[in-house]
Image 1: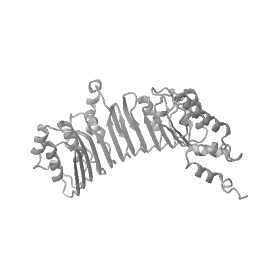
Image 2: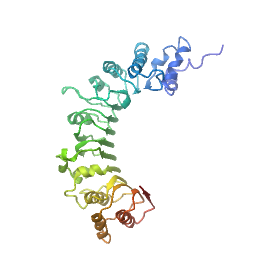
Image 3: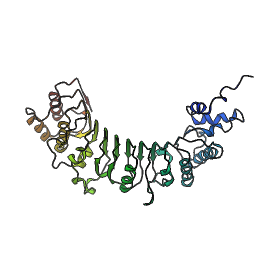
Image 4: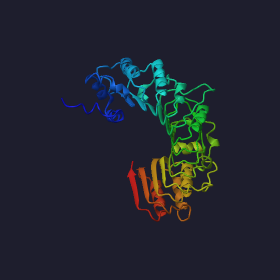
Length: 388
């Protein structure tokens, strides 16, 4: 008989091979021999997704019971080796107690990457993140969806090794985020999507480089993030009459602190939050490192948004790429304003090389804006104008 070369591979090599396969195929190796019966439970990475569950099981509660059979096998027969990655991304209805116990189990296994995708949890944030997760010293990547983060006040929250944090439809409070984010000293990437309750966002972290916010909020402070390289902000649909604090924000206070920024992507709704009062000619401190600026859903029927857009452009002397997505046009005041400033030095874009303007509908205001930008860009190489 030929020698079983695969079984004789070193454990770390075999783990590297098996983690490249879907978990369903790895579990099927249990029928090969007694040696292989529980070998799949000793993997360093587990991805629980819909491919693992038989298609005949359609009830979401039954699907979760099937997943729990897999998880119980891992707990009962898995080795003492670390579980570095766990991802739950399956359409099911998890039991809150079961999931709580599983997270506690993972916390003691040297976990580095934990992902709960949106389809896995309850719709109303019924799953409360166990405090035991904060005891994971090696956790590097955390991606949570549809859960609640609300530890007791006396609990120390933070991750000393965390580099990437994404929260999607997570229920929490501003004070919790203000405690959590600074207590992740190595955090480089932060993504906040569809936070359940509108809150005041104060982002503080000296090492943070990439920030993405697509959510409801009433105010934003980025003054204590000196290393930011990329910022992407859009304010989800908001009822402005219910946001009494938005007039206290201003362009200089929020954007003016981004001294190291290289890429900036804003949504017009965020400009509306900033308000139009006291917009300076240019920001107090130039954005010398900004090379890529994107503005989505720019309202050309809003003089305030046009003025704030031009303020950012004047404050970025080294800008190379500009992207504008137009949402509303047909504004005579904006057209007249641009034509009045056409012969002046109101705007100069000495380094601009690429311009893309999307959703043009054929109004004169759009033509004036396009010509205005083109004639202020002496080394422009490519301009793309796309109709709506």
